[in-house]
Image 1: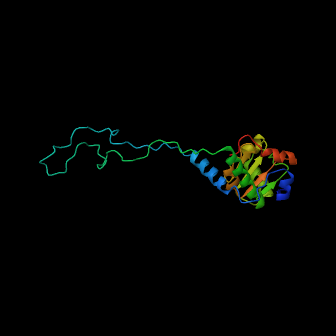
Image 2: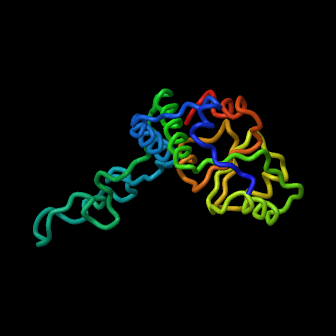
Image 3: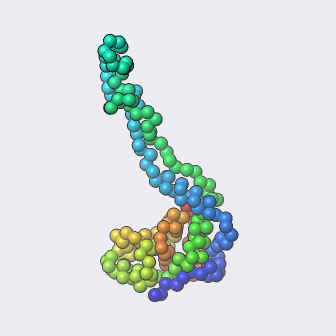
Length: 208
């Protein structure tokens, strides 16, 4: 196995900001909740008694029938009538400041590094467009089933060979987010040959 564990000392030498105190836990929670909320479609919709396409005529006369009085067929207490306080299309997204997003990303990365779940490798290249070759090479680097593979850029053979391996996700360093750092058993960083590149890979315009 050529992949090496990224230790805390090595991360500090690479100028990766490791959070060693207790701060950042709430930021991670807030960011993950916000990311999941943003994926909600918010398209649930029900009709009120005013929107139901039913006759507005009075079902029967007010008195003399022995039945309860009724004014309209779209009443919410009747089958086919309107819905009271039902869901309407809405936006579930939450606003999170950039400073909180940055703190959450640093905290998540720090925890994974402290746990020994971040591995580094010089290169991860598939010479042929073949999923079996991708799986074989990945098993040589780590025994984990769910792996997040991070690189500056992926060649087409590697990208297409790995996209059908469902427990594995390929992400560029500029696109990886806080939720992804927490969702996988191991994080494999590749195509980063120097300490400067390793640090620069996680310094992006938007940390989410």
